[in-house]
Amino acid sequence: MPTQRSRLTKTEEQEYRTRLSWLEKMSIPIVPAGDPSPEPDRVTFEQTWDELARIYELPSGAVAVVVPAKMIVLKSGILITDVAMMTPWDDLLDLDDPEESSDYQGVIGSLYHSPPTLLKPYLERELPLDVRQVEGVIIAHGQSSIPSKYHDESPVTVELLLRDERREELSFDFRVRVDRSLKHEWERKQRERLERARWTKRTGLFGPDRRQPGDQKSVSPEKPSSSRKLAVSMTQPATRELRKPN
Image 1: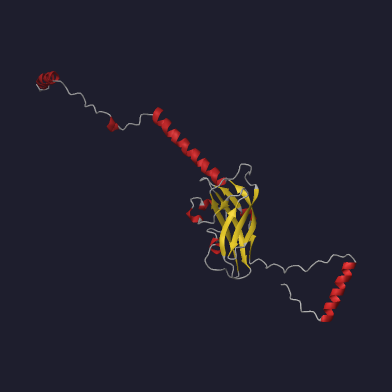
Image 2: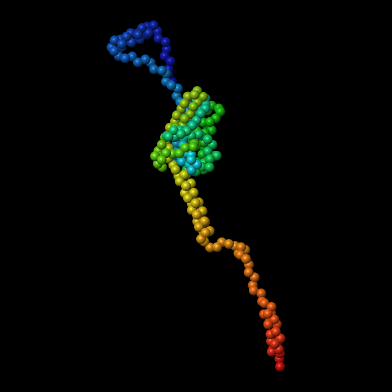
């Protein structure tokens, strides 16, 4: 805290001016007193669990940033009015509701605590913040893609951008690593589905006949002709006579 200097007496004032005149004659530059020290930050962030900080490329043509961090409010009264996250290629991401995304479970899958404590409710609220420390996760989404020059596991820096009720802008850097595992997993499943579809089609064309027995016309057994019946009836009496006892 800057201290306020007491007012000089006339004797002290005269002595002070004499010293200034002597310094000028000696060609010693006189540096005026600087401005008071700026007010310390009312809020700050510390990155935690660096190995879990990721920027994911998603199958839906979007990206998601996951940053475990601790928010420290040093002075009550700050109200965050705007918040966003910026990628190294200057795309802005929103701190939206990640639960509404179909990729949410994959994004938080590597975290130690599931479901995690989200810091979004503290960054987007209608009331000023009180002095506190909150450890959780910042998750941001946006329609973007990771440039091909950034390979998997490449370290990049993302920025958390804040604006408070005084219209002052704050920026906090976080180190994350590029991760395309979710997109690769989705592509693998798509290839498997296509392969199963092709195999089913080939079986239908060249495999055994799959028609049901009911699809074929039934053929009744051959009925004996009338002439055959007559022949049988003529031979039956003779047969009975041969079997009569003597």
